[in-house]
Image 1 (cartoon, rainbow, N blue to C red):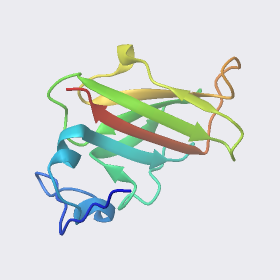
Image 2 (image 1 turned 180 degrees about the vertical axis):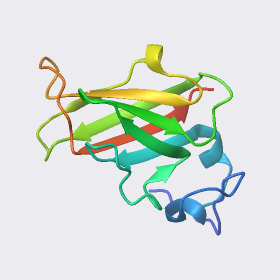
Image 3 (image 1 turned 45 degrees about the vertical axis):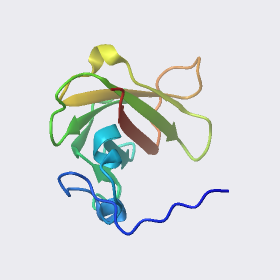
Image 4 (image 1 turned 90 degrees about the vertical axis):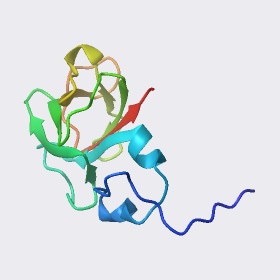
Length: 131
């Protein structure tokens, strides 16, 4: 078993949510470009701790959401990792790079892999750099 001992973790700009603001190393700012937890109406849950580099989430209806970035990315070299649940019932979320840009990312939720779109009350998106 390994042990990691650090005194401070900070992002390059220091603009991290309080939950990780006192973490250390530039890895956070270099690889995790954004994250957000939001409900089925697009409301960010506990915005002080549950979002990083996300200005808002737009509920487009029909189980489609647009995650708007606070600071635009320099490129499209990122990978959204999406997850959702409606009271732990096995919802799935997808993101299609055709809809993504340097200023926003789209996410769609479904009730299972084969059924139609369906809202989920717990949605989580993490945007990772791929370069």
